[in-house]
Length: 119
Image 1 (cartoon, rainbow, N blue to C red):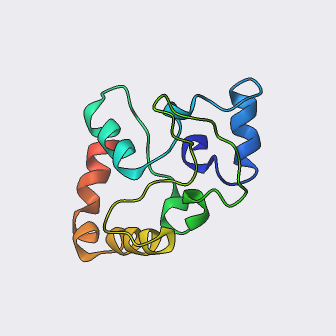
Image 2 (image 1 turned 45 degrees about the vertical axis):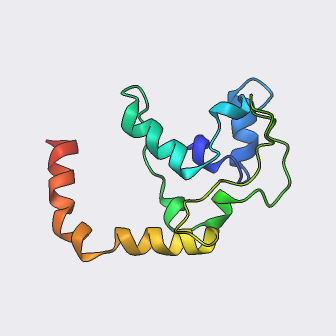
Image 3 (image 1 turned 90 degrees about the vertical axis):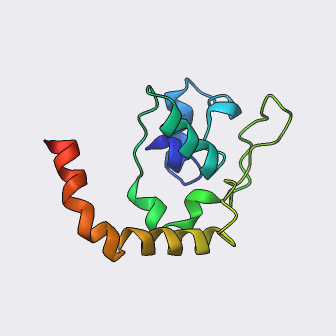
């Protein structure tokens, strides 16, 4: 949960506390949708699940408080989350993400996911 919500208070403070008084290394923090998606698909040890806030709270994707999250190994400053090309901005991403969740396709197949997860 803290991985996705680090940009929203009080989760910012909780993330710092979890890491012993500072943020985790910038390369391990939530920085882009595509990278997180690929990590979950390719790494068996990556077990992140989506949090509800990614369906209604665009602030999870923006650094509205200008927090210094650090610098990546490539020298980039970690700031707002990089969005996929189909999203114009965080509000558009949240809207499209929620529309997909509420789509007829998801509704028709939700029972399969429940069976997979809960047996």
